[in-house]
Length: 224
Image: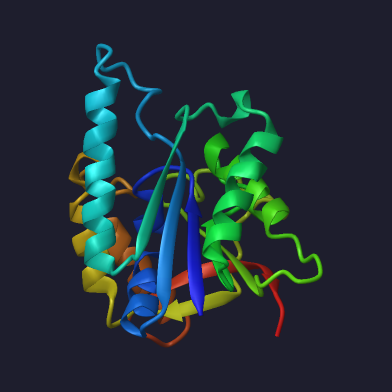
């Protein structure tokens, strides 16, 4: 199995599926991570974007090393402004990564997250991984991202309703260690993007399926 994680911003990959990434890597499977947006240019940081981008990328590389990721690709699209980029451009970027990595499984954002970058990343992935003849992609899973997925106004059409769970009892510690690389992005409890909240969510998802800890996903496509 070759696994590709397509995330909008550095830190989304750990929040959404860091435990699953570590589990795949521990099983000897190759994992690649691709980011579309830089994750920082929407902030008012006195024009110091280049230094901030470098720090964020360094954090992503450290997190990848902790989790066992083979390859990390960084996009340079504007943070929280993917809606200013043509959807075709996003799709072509993802297609390029899919063609190079040739994954069998792709993890990406839930289609109805509050964050616009997450939603457009999801749409680009679903299009790039469409099941045309000869495609090697058999599974596309959508993860939840703390402080985005659960903040969307609830409705039957947009609520995250997981139907695929991965036991991360043995890799939760690595997920939390990888989040430490993104210390600048974390918040104090009871913010949902705090270490405590991430641990509690993993334990809650685990308890819902009889495990110590789990990550939950919505199946976008699975070909058995």
